[in-house]
Length: 468
Ligand SMILES: Cc1cc2nc3c(=O)[nH]c(=O)nc-3n(C[C@H](O)[C@H](O)[C@H](O)COP(=O)(O)OP(=O)(O)OC[C@H]3O[C@@H](n4cnc5c(N)ncnc54)[C@H](O)[C@@H]3O)c2cc1C
Image (cartoon, rainbow, N blue to C red; front, top):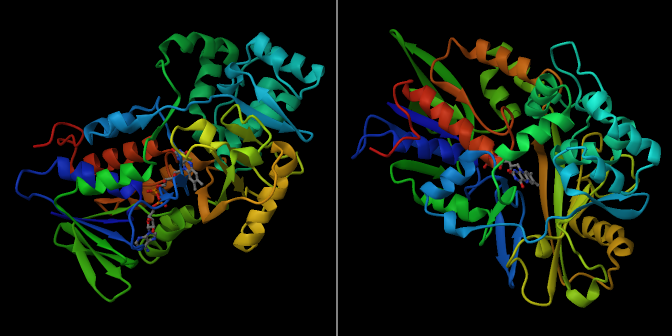
């Protein structure tokens, strides 16, 4: 059997890894091709190491509680390279000032002490958040906007100032459109089971793994891509080759697929995994699965950019005693957040240097990437200058743009995925994986890849088992 994986981001690479693990020694039954448009692998995972700085263009860490990320690090012998954040405090911008978010609130647990200490909130707003345990749970089933869920539980003030930046902010999304069901099913489940998040999260707390919530890698996240791709011994990687089309062909009772590449070459395959954004997959599916393509096109995307700035320590007056700050949508501020990278992670800047990572672009802000790099850098520096007490210009700056880079799981996302699955049922061994579907975090993508490999090879093979 030949499988073609399209897309060499973490989803596509993990899929190749899990398929290989299920193969017999010496080759068959699976022959794997991985086609990647760019000349490098990793997609949004991209690390630069320059002049003593470690600069992440995309993700800087992953959630430890979802087991697939750590399991893959262990399997690749990378566990000893995992590093924990040095600073945990997170701030939120409120009327031009930074306020620390008490730790319980980072998990959306409205402990009374934490709510009372939350800065930048009116007393009325705090009191309403404290009533959370007495707010009756929602009776109707089905999806609802994330903003509606957060307002219902915590009240408007707390939702807008703290809960939304912590949730929708991560997705650069509009909380009025994002799906509570697709993004935070565990919170909805706690509400249903315990009648309140305060009670539910307190009850769930002892079961939570101890240790840091996030981990990164000492040399940067791209070390995961490097190790993963180096572990692929039986996958033929075609980098710098773009796929432009896909056609199924019935052969007796079986199906084969023709994968067309921009250079005119065609690969024949028994199974295909599309590990590219939904809009890209939609283009190829439209001729033979128009219903699936139409539903895929309903998944919106938001463009963002990461602006990384290096300063000498004495150029920054702020103690940078935390991991950074978030920006609620209501604040008139051009950035959506800023990570104090050299405080958060060890080894990101040499002694006496500071590295800051500013984010721009969110749902509804179509012009975020319209400016040239120097203008984006200037805008970030001037926005941060009064907040962090910046002096002078940065020593170095890097801009990483992610046009249409953030998929938005809007209300109805799970139903949309179910409809896509039904529409693709006539086409066996054709899988869609990646950030557009069931989770955008690195562990989610590893999980999707493992499940797709299992599905493609048949239920009897477990690709997460020991290699054969
Ligand atoms: C700025 C930023 C910060 C983030 N921070 C975090 C974080 O801290 N933690 C976390 O867990 N997640 C984070 N994420 C999310 C996470 O990085 C992404 O969801 C994940 O990397 C996406 O992986 P993927 O394999 O689905 O897609 P991608 O990485 O987008 O890979 C898709 C690949 O397909 C290729 N491709 C596209 N079209 C074609 C074609 N026609 N032919 C061949 N190849 C093609 C692309 O070149 C690309 O390499 C962040 C994302 C961004 C943008």
